[in-house]
Length: 260
Ligand SMILES: O=P(O)(O)OC[C@H]1O[C@H](O[C@H]2O[C@H](CO)[C@@H](O)[C@H](O)[C@H]2O)[C@H](O)[C@@H](O)[C@@H]1O
Image (cartoon, rainbow, N blue to C red):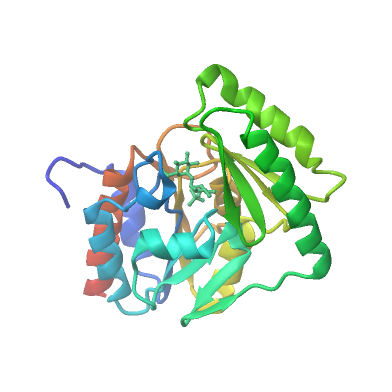
């Protein structure tokens, strides 16, 4: 653990208790949780201590590691740079990489709604300086981080209106300087439940920083452990300040899992 990072006694005790479960799933959000936020999503990287701790966890017995992100899977692969043993879940649970195989199927109706959505959001982005649209397999994200603060809200309101979410049966998610539209309604909670089943885990660590991560915390059971990263309301039992502290928590868990 980095000398400048101190974790609370309660969190350390709960991490130690979690580590005694026979099989522990470590499921983590990426942006804001392991990686500080940056202007260009492609540039985001986990802090080095978090990346090292993930590799240690991947090497520990009976400790599957998964990333659950709002990013498209290809983007998540690019920024996480984790070996194939890591499970990757992109697009809030729509896309899954397991044993190197990617699962996602879209039907004709979904493809048609995606095309309409694309045109609607691109025309909104063109009206606001700094706004841009990120393409994902089952939806799009309108990024407003680089839009003047007074205009960002207008851009998001215009996007909601143009996308016509009800008429087009879209799921809309609001995040940090981002508004996402998807033709699928899968949540991070669905992803946690599916991964628990798929990995046969007895207990789960889930950590996240944003509003959509609350669905993940809601899927946790009493035996599990939830860590909110940063400020904001949460139903997680624990909170750490940022990615450096989250890295320290992962290091503590990795050390305990290597001792079991
Ligand atoms: O579920 P997450 O892994 O937290 O993904 C949420 C969104 O993350 C990315 O956007 C966010 O991080 C960017 C890089 O730091 C930042 O520029 C942007 O303002 C943030 O919203 C990603 O680009 C989105 O697709 C994700 O939905």
